[in-house]
Amino acid sequence: MSVPADITAPPRGGHALPAHIVGASAGGSPAARSRRRPRRGIVLGVAGAVVIAGALGAVQVTANLGYDDAASGFDDAYESTQSSFSALDGATAQLAETTEVANQLVAADAGTLTDPTAKETLNAAVAAAGETQSTAHGLLAAELPDAGEKPAFFWDLFGATEQLHAQTAHLEGLAEDADAESPAVGDADAAIDGAGMAYLGTAATAASAFEAAHLSARNDDVIALREAAGTLSLSTTLDTTSIDSFLALQDAANQVVASEQAELAEKGGPLLNARLEVEAFARSLAPGVLLEFDWNPIVNNAGFNGSMGGLTTWWWDEPDRAVIELSNSVAEQWPAERSRALVAHEVGHAISVKCEDMYDSSTQDSIEKWATAWAISMGFTDDANGVWAYGYPPQSYIDAAYGCR
Image (cartoon, rainbow, N blue to C red; front, side, top):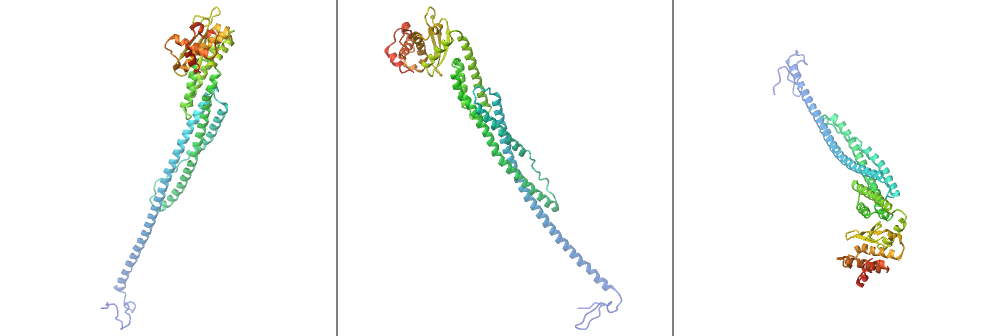
């Protein structure tokens, strides 16, 4: 190896030193060596920068991944909370609708047919539902948090991630509250529906007793009452349809009262009590047959000079019904046996709607013979039972009439 000119060759085993150390004048060698030192510093600086950049990159990646994971959890919680709120909102809307129908029912009820205790139960259910609705509305008023835009740098990402975790926990709490409240809202709705249907049921059930309390009402109005009660009894839930059915029943009941008052007004006067006794007697002979009565001075060309007249119109279709017209003389002679026998004859016509196949109804003679036979089968033997007017009926008719009750 050669030795530079400015370095004294050392002895074997010694050291070569620069000339300026041994007294040579300052020259190019020290400068040359000093130019090599900055290169090493640059390398170290670059290496440090690379290390720092790598560390920062790792932190950025970690921050990104943490944020993305938190954002995914937030999105799931947000969707779940929206679903829970939607279910609660739907249940609350249904409860509000049911409550409104219940209020309409109570407001429209005139108390003609419904039971007061059932009404109190319905009002209590509505009041309790109001508290449940208030709680549900408070939950639904909560504003769901917004995740916002994703930050770009790790120093913002870490803070945003923590915020997402907090918002996610808040959303999960809201969802739990909504999920817990939905069954309570459903129970409140069911309570109103059940109380409302029980309330309506009392009206449908009361129709029969109401009819019995207004026997003088016209047949058509009683039939309308029965049909309205039947329609209402088919209702299964408290809604506008069931309310309409209730109102129809209530209107029918009012019409029954009105028609009875009109009938009683027509029958008024000194013969009123006797007429009502005659009608009650006729009804007792034909249970299940809807009877309506008209009274006139002359019926079927009879009623003057002590004579009595009767005329019956009946319908073969459902329900079993008939209209019996009687002369005033029937009431005037009541309760004479001949008066009772004539009424029994007319009821024999009316009750034939229950026994259509027991006799020949193709001729007027056979129709009258049947009514006479039926009166005889009931034990009314006075000739006013039809024998005087139409002759004695065949024994076969009398035997058959025993089976018509």
